[in-house]
Image (tube, rainbow, N blue to C red; front, side, top):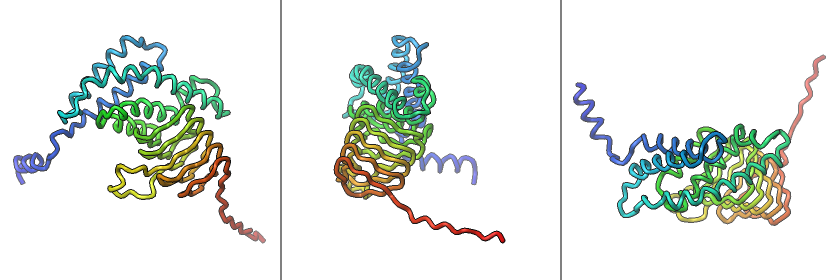
Length: 263
């Protein structure tokens, strides 16, 4: 096959005119610069916000290909939300220092904790998601997913003082509701019972009430599943139905120990 034929076939199969890989790169740069603006002590806020706005304008040009959904007015709304987002993130960081004895300073949380990093990107993406800004919120949280191993859909609703310890393998689905002062550990899944496409506009993921702790590798599924306030969910628990407030749910594995005779 000639080079010209190969090129012709490749061009024939490129069927998505709005699929631009640099959109992903720009979304990641936008997220990166937002971090510097909000957290870095050496970064001047006013100067950096102008840079972030410039990147956002480029994102608008790349992602808003549906002319019936104008995006150019989103930035002013979004930037007004940043002080409140930062306030919430400071509460998340404090929750980490208060709940993890391995945390030695607030700076350590901001710089070292993948759980906090994932929550921060989620909160920044969630506000854009609520405004209906297309694609970019998901690209932001997938960027965090790649960096931290934590998969939080930007559509999830998460309250104040949220803490994810160790982080890796955590999955929080699109219609999850998490209220205040919730702690979860590595490998936790807050997922759906069904992945049918017809469930797209239905609440598919659980609700976690205030002050709940969910330990490692627990799986909680279903849109009607509610974990009552002040409950503790033990490691490796599998739940598909609601539990009342102040519950303790544990998984007891059957362990068999065989003693080897070394005579």
